[in-house]
Image (cartoon, rainbow, N blue to C red; front, side, top):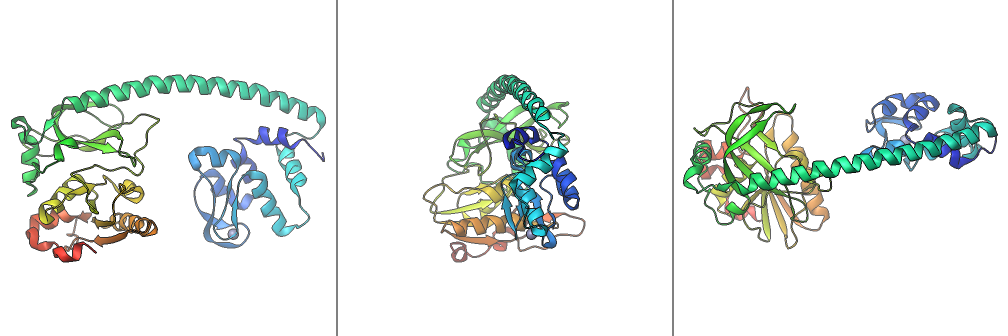
Length: 375
Ligand SMILES: [Zn+2]
């Protein structure tokens, strides 16, 4: 039926766009089934320019997507019009409403009224679910905050007599600078921390190095842990290094561990050990960015004028890719940025090599000259 009420169809289509678009544009089926996956553009071709937007599910819910070359469309109607118009220039918005309405079985006025009523009922139901979810989240967030505070309160400085396991672990990696000024505000030791695997199974209590992760604004968000044995080896658990959960109203994006005070030139590395190793060699604070994902999004504190990245060398190229992405962003912010890749090649059978390995094998002489670091 012509001139269907666009609002009714739009509401009925919400959250159903991936299946609608898949039905209307079969050549983008893969992108509709796997939201965010890049595929060939249905209009201009190429290899991977097209995708349906993820955006916390919101993009897919509205049917937003598009192509790097042809442009982006804010909702499913616009996307469908763009596609149809490429082959039939007379195709207009009312046609898109009709086509989508047809798929949703809204073809006459009665269907339209039924759909409108369903939409209302559904909206009330969704709101109720949302309220329930918010309530549950609040309880969960409260519990997370309670545990984070308790763990942090129970920690002691790495210089404390009882933190021997941490010092044994670090010195086995030739890292001896645990008493650097400012460290104990962000890097501490817990004598017996409970470890759980990803399924939530309890794995035992172990000594642990505990680091405070702050968000892009410098607000504490969560904790990172390296579980150890009392002899200073990595603990025999599924994964010895892991981040604690954080409340749903917080984000680690852009965050870092503020290990020592940042100067105008801020040195950064991926892991905690790598950062400490570089700091040993160059005598300046080095902030760990925890992983490649966070390295890509890292936001330097205000007052920073240059960033020096001490990247990992991975077989997968992940460390280098993240460092390059950070460098591009730092340059775009108008700051200087230098990258240093470890001067060792990756040993056969290993997946990566980092600046801690350089410190262990070559000592300080494996590091670039001081004057080249300020670039
Ligand atoms: Zn295109």
